[in-house]
Length: 262
Image 1 (tube, rainbow, N blue to C red):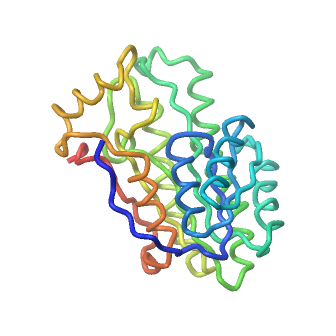
Image 2 (cartoon, rainbow, N blue to C red; image 1 turned 30 degrees about the vertical axis):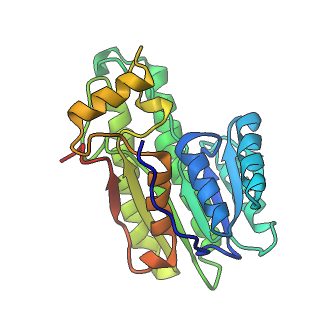
């Protein structure tokens, strides 16, 4: 894996950020990156242990974080996450990254269990919808507004794969929902965008029975760049959209996929 070049920056000093699905993978990388640039970070997810590990890693690098367990498919939990952020020093929610998602695939659509459909819909679509509502309601009351980045996927509007029809439908919905919300609320000072990762160095990109080395060889043969993305590279794209560097970027869907959807 090629390391990305980084320059010390402090784009989020004094700001409070919320990251869902922050116990591992892309969510953890985003939380670490935000904290490294000065943000106070609320890390959210369903299980306490991986969230506590994310907090430990942030504190080890000198940052500040709070772990909150939550089921983002419940409105009360989405609202509780916003309250937790606002109760931190600073009293605001400045950045939100809605990364929590589930994949229930590997079967043709006709063979997909109904529970798998409903679980993906609940987390990937309803969860983003409820999170957006709670976050926007707070951000539009703040003089500085706020920035939201929703994590979709190239499986959706950009590509799909056998056994991923339902997942692709939910991720296409995330992009459509985000673009509509961006138009509705930019006048409120809330800027909303999307990042759509392709194959990334997480367990979700491993095919059944595939090792990481197998995945590396597959990427060499199938991706124009010849490799999958590092979680830090996805985080860098998210931080750009959440920062003042992207102050005029509204409702975009930024694809980061090693050229896989070309």
